[in-house]
Image (cartoon, rainbow, N blue to C red; front, side, top):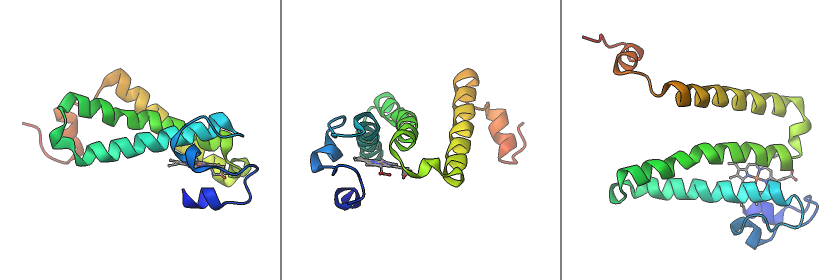
Length: 128
Ligand code: HEM
């Protein structure tokens, strides 16, 4: 975060307010706003992770699920705002990770978690 504020190579300086309030940057408003918002979600997920015992389990689970959203927004943030994405070494890794995560997310939405039997098999335990 500090480096972003000091980075002289970006077209227009990022202000401290852009680190906290999304969609206010004077260039790449959408791209940078997505970064700010996803950063805030990550902070929320981390803080509620520490406070898990004090939070109602279903509220905690829904907050935790926001990390899926943050993941997608970080990808869009880097895709729309980053300058390294034009390099095939970077974009091929990023697109591969995005593709695998998309397949896993769709599979989870369609079929839910593994059954207890599937989990036991995965851990190498016999299922009675
Ligand atoms: C307050 C929050 C954030 C701000 C203001 C911000 C700002 C920026 C800016 C200005 C760029 C473009 C740099 C360039 O000119 O190439 C960028 C790129 C990028 N950001 Fe963020 N960002 C934020 C949060 C995040 C978070 C939370 C992540 C990931 C966990 C992230 C990952 C990336 C990546 C991967 C790039 C692409 C680098 C490249 O391709 O050059 N950013 N960000």
